[in-house]
Length: 133
Image (cartoon, rainbow, N blue to C red; front, side, top):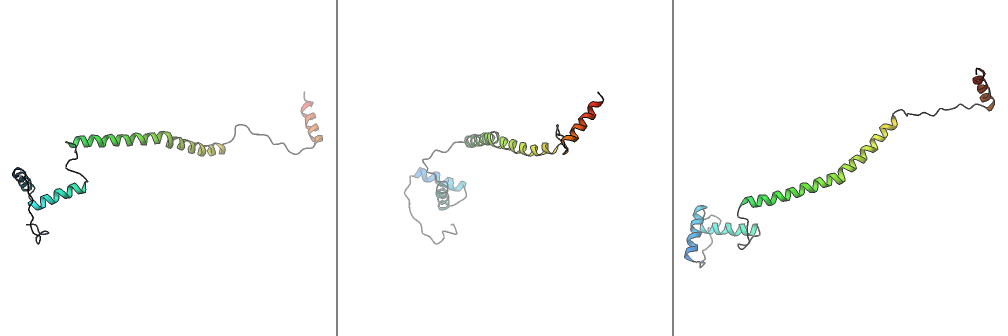
């Protein structure tokens, strides 16, 4: 007798003899009493929200294939997100940061700054540069 149900009484359920024999052999295989076996069966159906009429895949390979299909679908979605969203965004950010580095390098063309000379000084410089010609 099970300890948790020690003080409870018994009830009769009418079932066919062939089914009773199958149930008793099932309970013996699980090394449980008839009451505990039936209780565990009911808890299983309630926990997994199943009905005895529901179809369950015969083999775990079918379940595994379904799970693998779902995993492959998730992987495809993640790759698409990476390709269309993550990589372009990363490229834009890298372009922004490398633009700063390029600006810090010395420029190829440098504008010569002229000093504030008067017109007379400019003429004298021009005349000096043309004297040798």
